[in-house]
Amino acid sequence: MATHRTKMLIIGSGPAGYSAAIYGARAMMEPIVVQGLQPGGQLTITTDVENYPGFRDVVQGPWLMEEMKAQAEHVGTRMMWDTIVEVDLENGSPFRAVGDSGDEYIGDVLVIATGAQAKWLGVPGEQELGGKGVSACATCDGFFYRGKKVAVIGGGNTAVEEALYLTNHSDDVTLIHRRDELRAEKILQDRLLNHPKISVLWNKTVESFEAGDNGALSHVRLRDTQTGEDSDFGCDGAFVAIGHAPSTELFKGKLPMDDSGYLLVEAGTPKTSIPGVFAAGDVMDHTYRQAVTAAGTGCMAALDAERFLATLEVAEREAAE
Image (tube, rainbow, N blue to C red; front, side):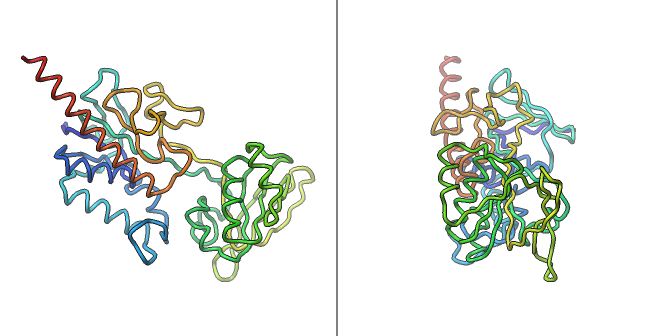
């Protein structure tokens, strides 16, 4: 077991964490990134990335994350293969974290970039057909279904927003919901129910996702919640939209969160309620959830961390005089 000391400790290693590290290293904060269980975040399970600025051609998600990681290391970031299991924020800066390895990490500032994970149905075919017709992000993958028949599974704001977005690419969008009414906000319901490109299948649960001869999704097997009757719904793409779960278990009772578990920050900033602790990326953003916005908040966290440390140093000098 060892103790690792740094001016800037970053928990999480997606676009937010790596971007914070790049800016932090350039500001001479010698950041440490504890990469967690999924180094690179959700983009490592995304194949074609077509909407990240700076690339004319489609790039692969894992490659993009490797490039971000290499850039962060190139400017002076230390990457640690560990998963944080405990944090101590009670006494203010410096902040302490303990890894699954038993190693201790101490940082004058802390950037939380642990991300969020899409919720899945957990039915057969869902994971096997990921990237082959099954997705959890319409804004990421909707472009690949231009002119094709698509389905969205869910009934809340996320599902309705995904269905409405998909009408930019498809003229045949079907929302599949297990109840006979939606949970989404009324204004979103009205837009969806009156949209000429969208139809709704009520009282249906997804039993499985089925592949065709080409190995890609061919249809969704449904069960009627009232009659118990099974049916098949043919489509080219199916988007699971039952919400996201932010990875914030570690901070329960230690930082304020909203009802869905997202970390609360000062409006327009990555600042949490504890000075010197910042949140960036999907862990605090339940609205946009894009790689580019996560990277942007990672940059903001690093810049604010630099200002916090400068203020801290001034206060320490004044106290010593």
